[in-house]
Amino acid sequence: MKQHILPTAMLGILGGGQLGRMFTMSALSMGYRVTVLDPDTESPAGALADVHLCADYDDPAALQQLADTCLAVTTEFENVPAASMAFLEQYICVSPSSEAVSIAQDRIREKNFIFNAGLQVAPFLAIESLEDLQQDLSGHLPGILKIARLGYDGKGQVHVNSFEEAKNAFLAMEGKPCVLERKLNLKTEVSVIVTRTGIGQSVCFPVAENHHAGGILDISIVPARVASSVAEHAREMALQLAESLDYVGVLAVEFFVLDGGELLINEIAPRPHNSGHYTLDATQFSQFDQQVRAMCGLSPGDTRLLSPVVMVNLLGDIWGDDEPAWDILLSEPNVHLHLYGKKSARVGRKMGHFNVLSEDADKALNQALELKARLNH
Ligand code: ADP
Ligand code: MG
Image 1 (tube, rainbow, N blue to C red):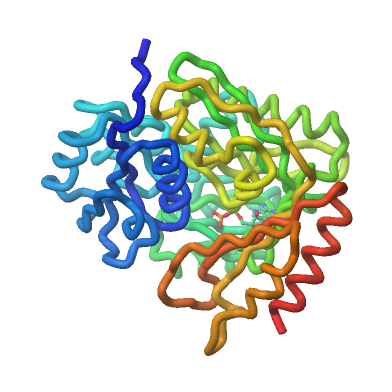
Image 2 (image 1 turned 180 degrees about the horizontal axis):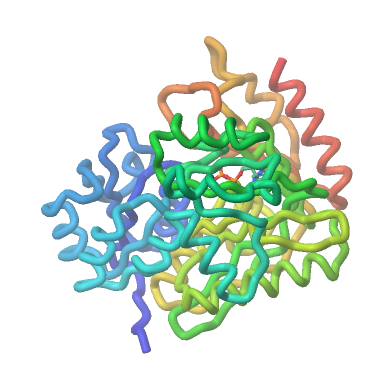
């Protein structure tokens, strides 16, 4: 059994974006020290960490320093080179494992893994060459051609209606491996965030209902407005998947909900997730607290929802020449603003989010939408 890692040990994280920053804040407030590896000199997490290793994710000297100075290391993104994680695994606790991360890096492996674990995914075809398109595609059209690696926030996805369109989209993605997924009529989308420890204790946070705009998460509503049987089923599926992966750490599982309440797993993320940001304010422990606890071999914290909550993402789109009018949010007694400290705002860039807590989810949603509209002005 893994030993507990206690404060004031040094913890490492690969990646210093907003997820790394919120992890760093959790770890620091618990008394741990943090080293962030991120090549960006202005990394949001690097600015707060005890040590910012400003180097590439496969830089041998930086990886050796992590191995020498940290007792455990985790990641904030799935595209960290699996070889870097495998290197660190020789010396210190790495969670999630390089194996789990490499499955989540590749949509083809990910979907096959989920399917082989006995769980449902959207119908898909692996497209690794033009020959793979020379088959009956009718069951998968109209569809979405998704690049297998490095896609996020709807990037690397093309909607296709015919063989011709699929072929052109595949060529436009330089013939890189893709999946062709049937476009489904979604009733809604939900996600579950699981925390699992090295001795197999697992818990999940309440199910979030997610709404996207332009392929990017826009709003999460918790509790999700789905039947309790659907929510329970989503939690069971997420726990089963974490078990099958022998997962250690925080795992996000995104689901499609179809008309009859049927659930399909869309994708997973081997880390805290945007749809779990509500846990910063509406549960006793945030998903980042859980990430710290799991990597340190501590048991997971309580996950009960303390209040209905709606999370709204703040994208660079609303910045214009000036900062948005934050007093709109800060003058509300039940609204929590979280900004990530990013220096420059760009369209589609996640700059922050806010959580609205209220006695019921509909009330929180109405207030959140009204605040969002005022901020957009
Ligand atoms: P990303 O890695 O960009 O999050 P996703 O596969 O999760 O990629 O797709 C982003 C969003 O696009 C989903 O949350 C969903 O709203 C929509 N989408 C993706 N695949 C499908 C599909 N097969 N049918 C309908 N909508 C889809
Ligand atoms: Mg997604």
